[in-house]
Image 1 (tube, one colour):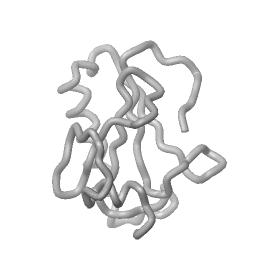
Image 2 (cartoon, rainbow, N blue to C red):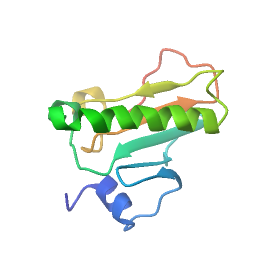
Image 3 (tube, rainbow, N blue to C red):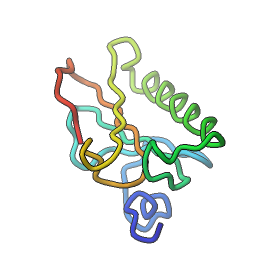
Image 4 (cartoon, helix red, strand yellow):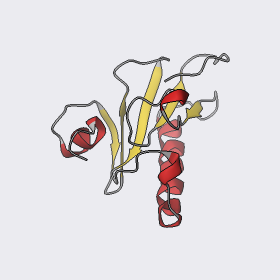
Length: 115
């Protein structure tokens, strides 16, 4: 998608502070963190929302959770805990229409949900 900010990050057109990248997935620090650790984990394939995840994408979504697990261990938060949030659609708080998984940690989480 030409105007997708996350697609531009994937292409290297917009800088990001990457913490992980492979052929299918990229993870980088959120520019407006809602917690001491706030990482966005996204597929390189443009999928706008959860509603667009196809059966063929199920492997990719599983891989995203594997990457989240790896990051949690690498960052030393696997024992203390972390939160993963996926917003679907504007009313849910999704601002960028490219599926992304918010990984939050570094403090005790309350009931607040991030956008």
